[in-house]
Image 1 (tube, rainbow, N blue to C red):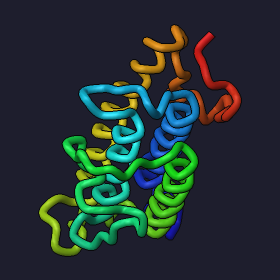
Image 2: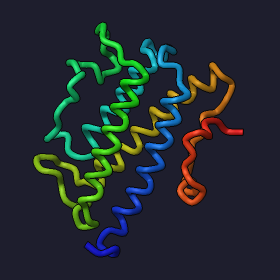
Image 3: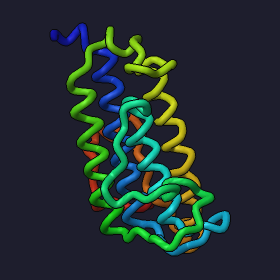
Length: 172
């Protein structure tokens, strides 16, 4: 594949890198026990990551993570299982690696193709997950703002040029 065949994929990859960086900051700064809409924040974090894991690539060919139990990804789930920040960070890294490996195997033409057995094309899956991801990221960050009176740093497109600093967690 030459660069012309991957120009759109590389653009998506850059936006995805920023998206994951922003969620890393969210995971590090949030209080996992804070209750939002009758659910602890860890549930919102897992829901966000699980959705991206499942829907970014192909929801029809998806295997649940080994720690998953029925309904754990649902914000309506009322089971007893809880995930720690450490478990979520490990899952975060796994999802991130999986998605980047997927993007590395695509070219621009692939973006217009439907994943096997699914009605939407790859680009629709990716953009849909980015919208979903950022919606939840904003909700989770709002709880940190309420509790800490500090804004978790959310990097935009210039973040790649300036470098993504994992130690710069809050807006100044």
